[in-house]
Length: 159
Image 1 (tube, helix red, strand yellow):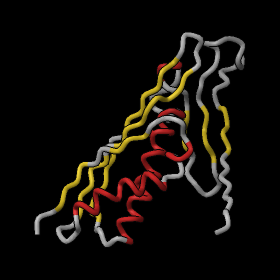
Image 2 (image 1 turned 60 degrees about the horizontal axis):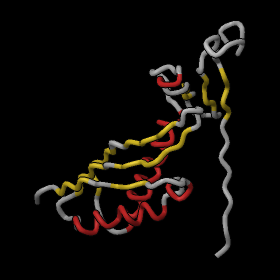
Image 3 (image 1 turned 90 degrees about the horizontal axis):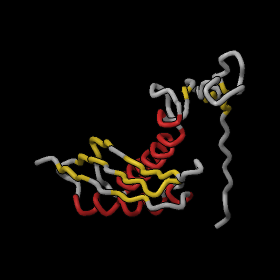
């Protein structure tokens, strides 16, 4: 089977010049906006721990969100093709990052905690096992160098 290549592009525009640019560490805002034609703008900043605006999305949170969304989309796909009817899906995902004294940092882990409600006619053991398959196929999880774990809560509706 031949390899398929896909490209993804976005414009990231810094909007944080407060009048003097980056003349000092405190002189500028970390605010930026992600722009992609035909989509709503996504306001970004750095994390609040790094002088960012807590009302905007930071790269670290977006990385955790990308892992959560990719896992969910693969999971829903595998449920659909395996006749598992998912009625609700909500993931309370968390990531842990450490920083060094010199400012460098890295993620050490991400944990996905999806709460999945399936129909009474669905097989709960199959539904649970499909999380492993979703993890194996997740593009983002396959691209990171730290562990991504999944601790699902399965709820099967009564007949």
